Amino acid sequence: MAITIIGYRGTGKTTVGAELAQRLDWDYIDIDPELEKRARKSIAAIFAQDGEPYFRDLESAELARHLTGETIVVSAGGGVILRDLNRDLMCKSGPVIWLMADEATIAARIQSDPTSATRRPSLTRTDPISEIQQVLAFRRPLYSAAATIQVQTDGRSPAAIVDEIMLQLPRD
Image (cartoon, rainbow, N blue to C red; front, top):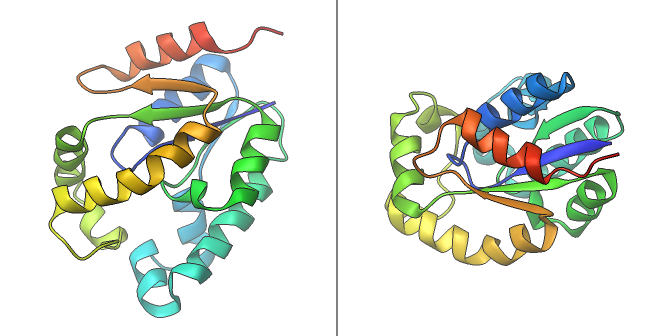
């Protein structure tokens, strides 16, 4: 079984995914840095030089490569849910955990991340709050359709979030 963590950037996928994997004593992979290593450039550079469709192809391939494993927690990119194929693969592989936060929390977390501006492209070319609102309005139904577990992360420690996830994971 694989567990996939989904959600908008800044909702805690990397931090929570790593802690969940440690708690379960499972392998852990964060798709975005793996994809950047493989492509030898940042996601922002991939978007700028090769376009979003090419990036989404790389993202799908990286996701498929890692979801074949057993006992792995995968933190997926925020837009991985845009493709039916990815949503199907995640759902067939095991629980899909949607980490959620309100727009203000997401904006504050992104702003406090020193690498976000250089590694992540603007998706709408608007101010950060407007971008978050626009993108979330489109993606929420997709996140919801894929998720088997939903967890709000605003104002909560990673340990508390993982505690909640652990209580909701299916027991063998």
